[in-house]
Amino acid sequence: MTASSPETNIAPPPASGARLPWLVGAILLLVAFVYFVPTMFIAYTEDAYVRSDFVAVAPEISGIVTSVAVVDDQAVEAGTLLAVIDDTPFRLDVDLKRRQVESARAAVAVKQDATAVLTANVDSARAALLLAEQEYNRIRPLVEDQALSQEMLDRATDNRQGAIDALEQAQAQARVNTGEVTAAEAQVEIAKADLAIAEYNLSRTRITAPVKGYVTNLSLRPGAFASVGVPLVGIVDDTQWRIVANFKEYIASDLKPGMRAWVWLDSHPWHLFPARITGVGRGIARAQEPDRLLPYVAPTTDWIRLARRLPVQMVLDPRPEGVPLFMGADARVLVFP
Image 1: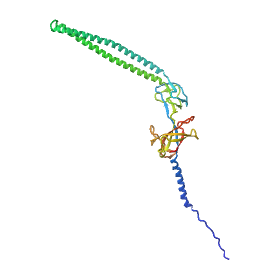
Image 2 (image 1 turned 120 degrees about the vertical axis):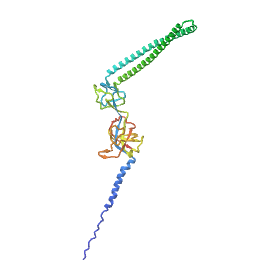
Image 3 (image 1 turned 135 degrees about the horizontal axis):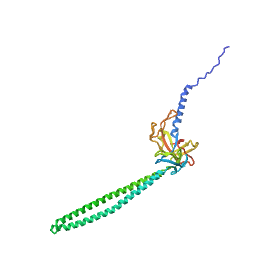
């Protein structure tokens, strides 16, 4: 009897090595699709924040602050009184300047009165000259006819010349007086200008809000010394709210003013607010340096080098009622180019 060995079916090994490249390629294709394709239809960034204008209110005159009329975080309207600087020296200066105006006007009045006297002197000298010329013209032919002596003609000539000199002197005095009147009137205008400046400085002792907004980080107290040009009160403008979103270059280049956008405010999560793009920045600074007019957008986050981004500004349109905005707060922006 012959023993027979059963047939053993051995399955071929799976072709895993052949499928691996396809699997890797599929994954890379999926990653490329997720990374590039959505950006053709959706522009999104988390690098956005709320911005407004911060107004640093500085006095135009120096002095001691006598009172502060607002508190920190108070809402103010344009023209709301913020603080008062001691006005005593400025009121005294106004009184002094008013007296100087009165003194200058009095000097003008004196010069104008002298004008009338000098005008009368000119008229009198002109009349005396006319009389002397008539006398000269009467005596001259008589002397030529030897009806009168040469001495009388010489006397008439001297009188005529004296009248001419007197008229010229009176006219010169009148001209000088006219110039003095003009100079005195100019002094009045100068004194009035000084008075206007003093009155303006007096009005600047009351510091008021230039815009509608919110007083922020107030530390001013009565007794502090206010210096010209040194800010005392900071106000966040409540009329200039906007969103600044930093988009990658190839995305920002496709955005245009007027496009609609959607904004997520971290101060009010789970709400999307409609917005409208107002402008796309046309330049950024390549290095972070102080006192630069171009904005600087840092290309790194957590030590990772990112693509350059351009700032895009937009406003909430319409601005939501009853939703407070906070300058510097984070936001996220979604745009469908």
